[in-house]
Image (cartoon, protein in one colour):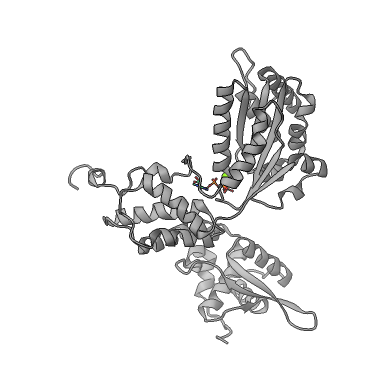
Length: 412
Ligand SMILES: Nc1ncnc2c1ncn2[C@@H]1O[C@H](COP(=O)(O)OP(=O)(O)OP(=O)(O)O)[C@@H](O)[C@H]1O
Ligand SMILES: [Mg+2]
């Protein structure tokens, strides 16, 4: 090969001016279609600047509806204003997906308040009560209002229960000099059901729901990024509309839309094309689906794979709305072919529910008269993905089962 292998790519003109505009971590200064949510947060948090305690809040909304980015934006402005007014405000953002135990949450906040000469709090090892006492001492020492954001809070509660939330929402009764406000963020609307009634009522003094974005709203969000992130006129007509429409179908997820657009531009670049057109968006969509679905398919346990195999096999034979009876017959047949004992129909029924929850199939309950119920099942795996081969890559027994001959019900 002639010259350095990076040379060719380095010399290429990029269609991006600023790729960072499409990063997940990018924080835009303008957040279209979130005025109401921003205002609700501001109306509550302004109390921190007036010397009062803001209400605790719970923010809900589907993934990609702007909860994190809106909260960061508002807290950033609050900090600036606090400095300007000489009002001490401290904010803490904890992502409970990463920091998911009581000890670690308290340790993280308390460490942020440490001053020179303080004993560092280790990542583990102290009794949790001691860490909590240290936190209270340091919050009082700093004074002012402390705003603790617990992002993806449902993870913390699922893992560690609501004990910590009880402590945190009680802090104002023990703090002498400081004040504290908790903002929980969740994409699970039923999350408060996991909380005890005392914690639940204290935490959700104010609820704020972020509705899913519609296609036109997503298009506005994308347009702003295009202005700063892409060279002029690289998008053919219909590209933004298609990205927005596809992401709106995907529960109105702005993150998905930004990913789609970024990958579409990359697809055009990889083909040394100077314009992005809707075909690139389709390619990007297939890639995203592939990246999303294949790891799930590969990690399914054997019997889940066999159930899905049975569904796919029937579909390839032209059958739609497959009955549980038919799935079971093919599944049991496949088990026999690889020398495994089939699980009971009842177990298969619960495996079908799990596949439904994972989004790999769509199951519909239908009544069969005389109070009998059955399911009708269709796979929900994007067409571009060969599910049987993908499962076979991680599980040779699926490949073996696929070699057999099956007596399938024909197309009805
Ligand atoms: N109104 C908006 N204006 C500009 N960008 C937005 C807006 N809403 C969301 N985004 C962008 O979409 C992406 C997803 O937003 P964000 O991370 O805030 O979603 P979320 O609701 O916190 O999702 P999750 O529940 O998955 O954490 C981010 O890159 C964010 O910058
Ligand atoms: Mg978030």
